[in-house]
Length: 151
Image: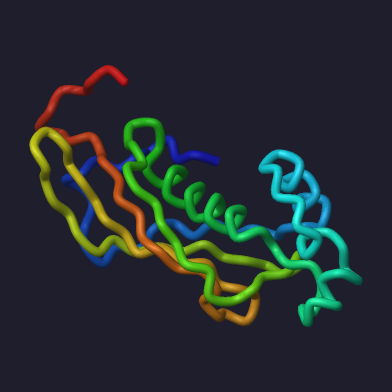
């Protein structure tokens, strides 16, 4: 759920952690995501096929993990902020049924013209605490020094 106390640029500090987001993906979610995204590669829903490929079972879509990280950031910035850039790298596989925790930390604040920017490192941890997916996000936040602008 999105935060109702969206941060202002002035209130954000480098090194601050984003509120974690916990996800518990299911095989049903993978099927629904396949339908929504058009990614019907069998490793995401067919256990026998996935195992024949040397996998432990079905695995999460990489783009779904990217979406989880996007939600982490957009929940934090609320309606007043804008997600400008999101990228990630898939380093380990995640499986349905595991508890995944999305985390982030503010790494840099800057101004670019009228934009008040914040860069964050973001990552996803599996139930063992291992980072499986990591990346970065850049957002613009409202400033107390500037009047609110129309979207």
